Length: 113
Length: 112
Image (cartoon, rainbow over all chains, first blue to last red; front, side):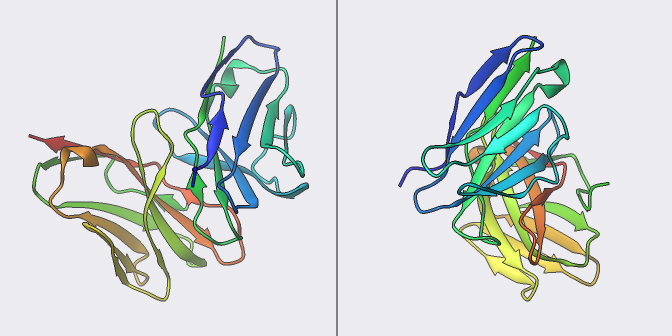
């Protein structure tokens, strides 16, 4: 049973470009969560999605960030017009139900030049 | 501000000794607590969890203790091994909520 998959593992973008981060949850998990981690800090919640629905986006910046979890395919975290402050590790987690243990993927490390 | 925090940012332990990592939380509405281990360059790995109706839970070489009176959580690792070197995060979740709130982490160093 494969774990949570994320790609790419490393992503380099110049300021103003777009970043797309992908997450495939564990088999049988329909709940996906995105978190951001700055160096030497804990993870900060961004958004929680179920298939085709955003359930909680209280941690998402108001501009430039969006997320989706389509009926088919992985969940996508999209960052438009990236700035240096977006450089961080972005982790995806999945669970079978709300309130269940969340299992994390290996993360995507975004570097904005 | 963060509702979950840690007493020490770094802990050094002799190989073979027991490690105790502490965590304080401030939200009395939290009813689910989790310890994650994060190795360099990797995602957080679930270690053990505990719900607020319990005060102790044991796993393989790990024990989590919950003291709701003083809002304190600890992770005990028995016979610490070099592979235990990592940053350990405590995290909390409130009933009916979906997000996990992470503390800043404690880095565990294993001394030979």
